Length: 597
Ligand code: ADP
Ligand code: TZD
Image 1 (cartoon, rainbow, N blue to C red):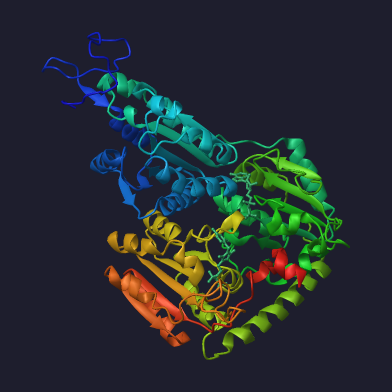
Image 2 (image 1 turned 180 degrees about the vertical axis):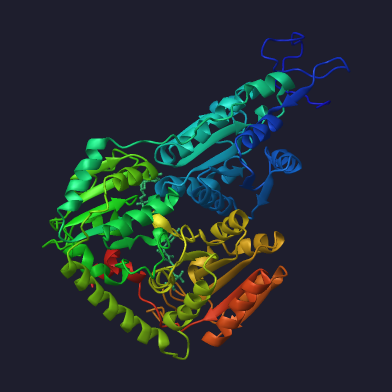
């Protein structure tokens, strides 16, 4: 570090201020120096961070360059939102905070959606954004990309910090890491003003200022009486049910969760991103009998799942309640790291607060070999419905209509995933999401990544890039044509890094479906449709990848098999019936206009 200058350093700074900040190497005798750029990189590396997802520009261009030079993997995107989604899902997959790096104001705002989404989904992520000169921003004097980013980020994330002095970078990164991964994971904002980066610090002082975070996500052991209470409730149940959520997938307590399910013999339902925690073909899976088990169960154990809209708030008709808001009579056990989660929608009779690994192992300890399996009539009733529904689905999947529909296309995807259980599956859309979730079985934990708690469109290509980078496995992205459009430009990123991603667009020419018309007969198309016959595959070809148009299941199968075998970036434009699909997919009931009808 020979020629670092710090514009913030006073002209006549004393030779060696105690902090070591603001020093310029003058001659061979001068102490070795470092600066803000390097301290950020060193702090991340010290804490085991190996990848940054971002987009360069003032003031972080040099940070991306220097990070790559220092051996970090820097994945550079075409839009910050996609970099942010990539970081968040990397956090979900690894339990380490995913890092997204953005420029000031507009870049920051582009990344912020992903940060808020990460917080909502309990994914650990740190959005590091460069920002403009504080003095100018605070006086609102009109700086380049002026914005009070810290204030804007605060309500949308779990924690937000700003570092003004290079000597505080170590503390800033340590706090950000702890906030992201401890307790309920979430998004953290770290504001790094432009002036921070070139600040010079004596290298030795800099090194000493860094913190290697010890035990960033400390185990949280549940209270023994809480575990007992839960076990008693479970023991007395006639029709028990276990609900696994993505918190259970995140916890990486796979073997214990499987043991808990199998030793108790209790039927279970996986939430979308918990699919594969146990193989979807497991005989205790009640997924194919969901609408029967939710209202019929008497005791439900939630493990890392919230009773939010995705579970109809734990009440109403879904749960056997008489009216839309009535309690169905179930007793709930909730295993969660957040003590505030219990009673958020309905009464929780047995909250078990702690990390899922510790909670499940404590529950297992209380479940001896003499544990009685659930009553046979309950298991029999579920099996009967499951078998019936599975047979019905098999019939539908076996049909081969022309043009293709969701089922005949997804029947192919189902086979491909079965043959490649280590592949990652990314999924977004409305019908494309709902049908894939129910048709495509998952066999291993944390392989299915989707729109999550918000049902957000746009995660597709960002998640795909991260899934490939983090896992090294082939990635299959099943996309609605509308959903794909939100992040489609990242096919260039996929080609640039030569990632083994196979994007399949279930193309029905529009949002939900593609056959709506302008009721006035005017020239503008309906707000819900796109260009008919769009050649999405050519987008991938534009950047050197493989593009395939598939109009039959056989063509789709061949294209996907080739993509997996070759590991080449591939986009399959799977043309399906434009009349296939229902408005809003399976959540039509939430759509106010549909209700009015
Ligand atoms: P899903 O959408 O799959 O139902 P949610 O995102 O609603 O799942 O719920 C996940 C829950 O898991 C959150 O309430 C969160 O606090 C909890 N959680 C996340 N990680 C852990 C963990 N390691 N231990 C315990 N609970 C966790
Ligand atoms: N914008 C964002 C960020 N998230 C959203 N969820 C929506 C808009 C609304 N929306 C949905 O909820 S699904 C969807 C939109 C625009 C697209 C559905 O069309 P698709 O899938 O082509 O992706 P299907 O298979 O045709 O239903």
